[in-house]
Length: 146
Image: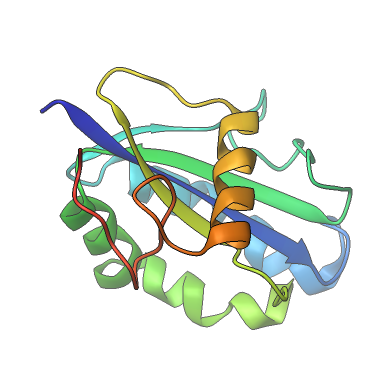
């Protein structure tokens, strides 16, 4: 496999992470991350010292980022939409504010490459500026690996 699929998504918090409003999100985060890691096709995910990425705020204090790498579209799609993760998605409006621009981006990268946070931000900004292209796209407008 010459290419892997990376994803980054941004969440705009409705309240601080330690608030009662986000307790359901925080309490399930470890389980959902473990589910991703045990899913077929999972390669890598961004983590801080706590084992998640909640301490990273490159886009502002009220935002969270999530980045992961998968072997292919089918693998990430199964995890996102066909596993227990879908229950997490259904609850996102309890915890997060919907932004005006794209909050999720997908892109292909050479197998073995671990993307950095700035790479993900650059891909998200590219998607927001140009719409879906081979370089940065969404589940709704997929592009094949180069």
